[in-house]
Length: 61
Image 1 (cartoon, rainbow, N blue to C red):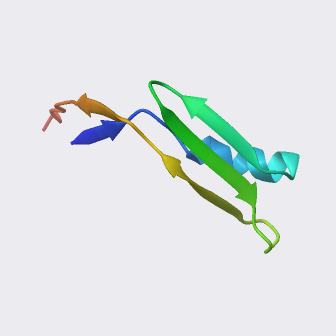
Image 2: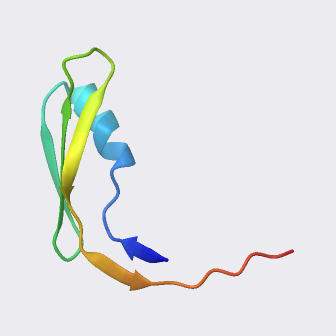
Image 3: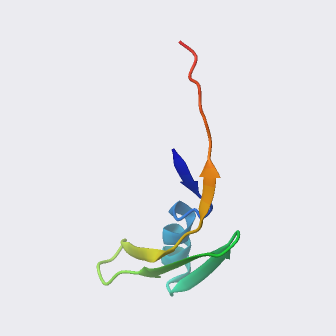
């Protein structure tokens, strides 16, 4: 499963908390932009991410 190096879940909360657009640069080139939406309590998010390789995960039965 390919992984990206950026995380957006906190970005939407930060944009709401601060009430303004924010830009987050993370890792080797990922950029996330988030801003409060016109609808109260909502945020918009977008950006670009850089692939961070693949990882194998084995779940215990």
